[in-house]
Length: 246
Image 1 (tube, rainbow, N blue to C red):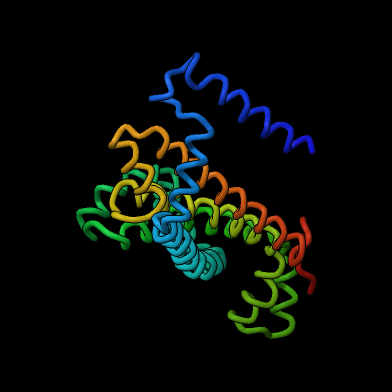
Image 2 (cartoon, rainbow, N blue to C red):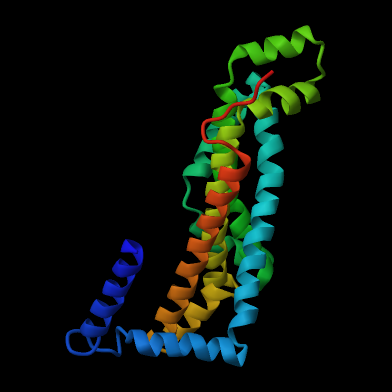
């Protein structure tokens, strides 16, 4: 109830401010924004952009997780490789991913592929580093037990080290999915011709504050739904702070 009351208060304040205090040309009214959203939904104009953003996010995240999880397992189990590659990995992690957009346009052109790539790159480091740091903190008893049982390297990674770092992996997955969404929007704004990012950018290019605000509200709702879904999924599947047991 408090959350609903807070939302209503924000919308009411927005309605009061737009027009009398701030020109509605720059800050559209809630009524106009909601009308624009309804128009997009009923006309069918919203769905191709919405589906494009969701597909870009999920595909980018799937690629990121498929590369990051085995790579973290492999690097963390080879100290020499870890020492050699860690400076390059940290440098790539520290670099703002948006600066890759011009290079992706040069290499991949304009379209869906650069947005998927930027989504995957953005999510990759969140999944990789959370899982990698979790693997570095796995107690040595896991590796010792695996050696006593004469487990293969693959069995040690999948049946001992991965479950022991599952809480960190869950954190990486939850953060990675949200940042895959961020990367998808940035990619759509810079190199794509479809998606919610493109829709917002297109409205801004026409100085259409109603379209911009409508797009932002839809994006905010999507982000909230993704966050709620992740919270529900990890409450159901992974207990917070849980570790695997040998």
